[in-house]
Length: 81
Image 1 (cartoon, rainbow, N blue to C red):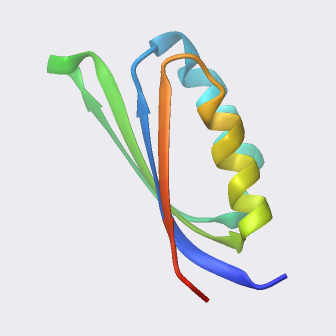
Image 2 (image 1 turned 45 degrees about the vertical axis):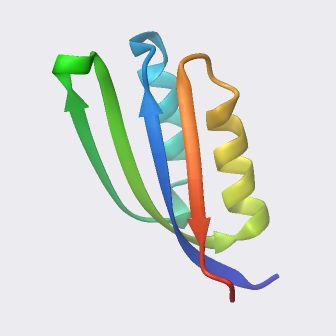
């Protein structure tokens, strides 16, 4: 399967799930090229942006698992080819 490059935006509103988010990102570390996390203290949430390079199945598995966590919102954008 062909690999794609993309960006995944993660908003964590439930601080109880930060550890689970970090664990998932660590488990999928082989497809993560870079990561930037910003705590937004005024809004009591965190924003994480990751650059990924993987198959649509790998990226979909990561975003799907993240999206199932309570208080976590995930959006992704991938290259066409």
